[in-house]
Image (tube, rainbow, N blue to C red):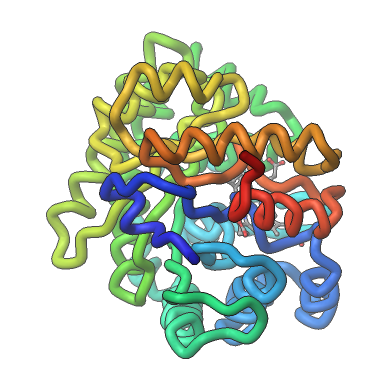
Length: 345
Ligand code: 1CP
């Protein structure tokens, strides 16, 4: 039986539905082959039929309850006209001293291939993909990077710097970050709403670097922008559940969830799930350590059994605490999903 991701967000308890952050991508040989055929990463991201294929790849192998559209958070800066190249890691043309007040004309149209890919993928999911038999079609998840995490890449150009320039500006010129976040917040909302219109049923907002925000700036750069994005989606003609992921906040993710009104919140690997469950009735997502998935074996089984048991008394979406790492053997993902469906007593 396949649980329904949307039902679980509404609070259904039982065996938790499952998908994995970064479930498509470098750990899968068929992804590497498709990426080689695409020539480069941007071409892959902007060719709808290839995006559909790569999005479906993990679902052809594993009995997952959701597909996450294959895309990247850096496509928003790309659409704003910042040069973006991917070799081993992404490299983004950094912002200068002046932040534009608004986006260039027609910026959202540059992302049309993303929306076309969503429509194609939703159709393929409804028609049924070969591989595992399912009682209901998997949900399609759309996503975006949160304004702060986008700002980190737009200021530093890549993650290789440990965001030193961002860290410096956050303390010496916070007004510049205010301006960047003010620019990005409505654009992130527009991009997410456009994904729902195209067929995405659930949204996840990745704030991968939320843990780098100085405590006295959390309200301005984390809470207020997320709340505004959630509100825009809720008030749009196509409301959809939003899963927040303020990575690096630990248990403060629960406070984040209440203040931003996200539908569910993803917990990072610093949180003991039992503790979080004791503190909230909100739907939670997570939080198996990606290293356990990489290592596999009985240690992974124990983690999965514990997670599955929590699902019977709390609304839960089984997932990792961050993305699948490229060194993960695909058989470990198969073991994870099989075990979750049939936990040992
Ligand atoms: O083939 C390749 O070499 C490219 C590797 C790759 C892939 C597979 C990148 C470059 N992006 C992606 C796809 C991607 N990115 C997805 C869809 C796949 C899926 O989840 O199934 C998603 C959801 C993302 C989101 C993303 N991109 C985040 C947030 C999630 C997280 O992991 O924290 C971030 C921070 C990025 C930036 C990015 N894009 C790619 C890389 C290697 C990075 C990290 C760079 C860095 O921080 O140095």
